[in-house]
Amino acid sequence: MNTQKNDQNLIAILWIALGTLGRLLPLPPNMTPMTSVALFGGAHLPRGLAVLVTLTVMVLSDALIAFASGHEVFGYWSIFTYSGFAAMVLAGSFLRVSVTAGRTASFLVGSSLGFWVWTNFGTWLVSGMYPLSGEGLMACYVAALPFLRNALVGDLAWGMVLFLGF
Image (cartoon, rainbow, N blue to C red):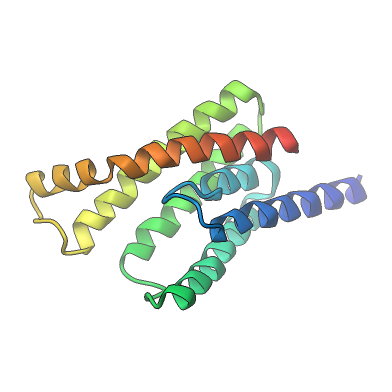
């Protein structure tokens, strides 16, 4: 039984690593596999390991992307991004009870929407791009709508590949 569990964990970790390579591909903004990876990890790995793997992948890929593009690796926005992915791992742990296509799609859409709301709230709060008012918050969310569309499409596509492929 332990060998089977270890094999399952290894397969899940390798699957997550493969999925995160998609983050480095030249895809449209927000069509990366990270939402799917976080939910998948939460559904198939022990919670602590899933958080560790997901955040490690984010830190490493953020560092590579920042190095290649000349941008900074971390900022105040990182708190919102990384906590959003940690929340997705937690959501994925509730998915493990019954992993069906319908439940998986629901969790993917819910996670996409939650992440979008949370990280754009963070953008509004710490970026200085928008006035700290109700109008500024609405302007931030309106400007982020194209990214939400991409995230929903990408998250559903990557999620079905990860979950159905496992």
